[in-house]
Image 1 (cartoon, rainbow, N blue to C red):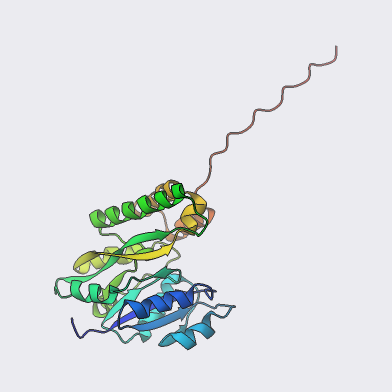
Image 2 (cartoon, helix red, strand yellow):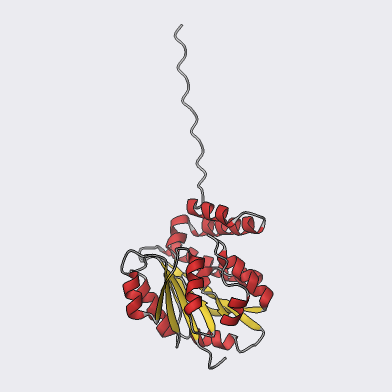
Length: 252
């Protein structure tokens, strides 16, 4: 696929702070078309996208719906879905095309680097590094990718499997399953960088366990709506109830 064209599709919602850096990383990753699919931003996201991206499309809000809308206007032979707070490494486009030289490979994803916030300490940075590697091991074993890993797929295959299911959560799990049924997938050694804010806020280990619980629940029959409701609540901390104060002895 040396002459193939890659379209990078970025779903956005009020991402004016992170979008310029994300688009710049796409340009540095290699020749590609950048498509921004906006879900109704109220800040300068659309204005920035019109200045810096190759195409901008409006869509109903929802990551899956936005990515499908971006795929519908993309002109590439390969579609790469990149979160607005994520960044591709230099040479990522070449890495994708090299993986797709194998005709049996229909898509895949990257390994993950969780970027710590500027004020994160050594302990937090170390935990985020370990967490990113754990996600890579899990993806290597299960071939189930997360949206943070910048999933890529041949455009023909994407359309053939029906694109992303437009569900409130777990769309990446479901697309991964459809891709595995369609052909071979590849986990690339290059890393995509994504913000570690959520992982820092919830705690890396608690976040990993929480995400696994959601995935297992989904596979065991939880609906996407139930998963989305649980995700919005986040990991619930266990707080022991305080014992009630002892009653005063009755006046005799």
